[in-house]
Length: 285
Image 1 (tube, helix red, strand yellow):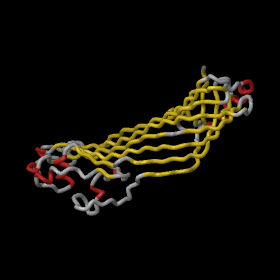
Image 2 (cartoon, rainbow, N blue to C red):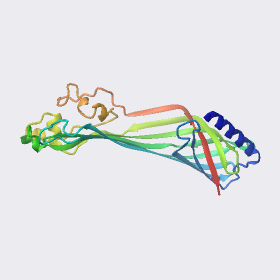
Image 3 (tube, one colour):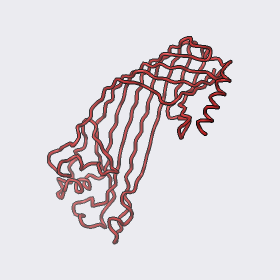
């Protein structure tokens, strides 16, 4: 039924487009992705703006934003200690975000009355970050070990950022089915480079951290700084228990730092650039 409705709608659009007029110059344009068979037909996570300097030249700028912030309980109340004091609920917080901007330039060809084929050049730049935070319950002083009434909630954080820069050569076309609205597609060849910022591990309670992970039971050992900033990307997932001590060969506290995975520093790519969704846009003065 969904495919039938889409076919009927497409036929109606073709009929309407007989007298449609494409861009003439000096117009502005807002565009989003269109996936008629998907769960969300209109995708506004990436928005493209165009300014037609003339009927065959346009400046373009794409903006994309994504963000997620999830909280999970990995220990319920009283799950660690049922007697007084009752242990608290402990949470894991996972966050990720990215922001992308892609300025570009388009050269349009004659095509037909309703069709505007073009060639475009684009410089996409994306900045992203991911961070996991895991809560623990335990002593914050070496004299409080084994005394739950003195325990506090503290956390360990694990974070990694990245930057991606590219250059795309694109070919596309806009088909106008009215004087202001069009459907289009776009594909091409892209060059890209991704670099990863320093991977870092932090804590909001240094003594509690050293007692938990480094078996520190002296004042000097409990005050040791976290050896937790590494060059390059390391995989981590607090939900799977990989947040700190999995980076050592024999568990936490090993004198020799060991990485079970190579640290990914950068990535260079050359390949196809294809937008799987249709583009739907609106022209205005």
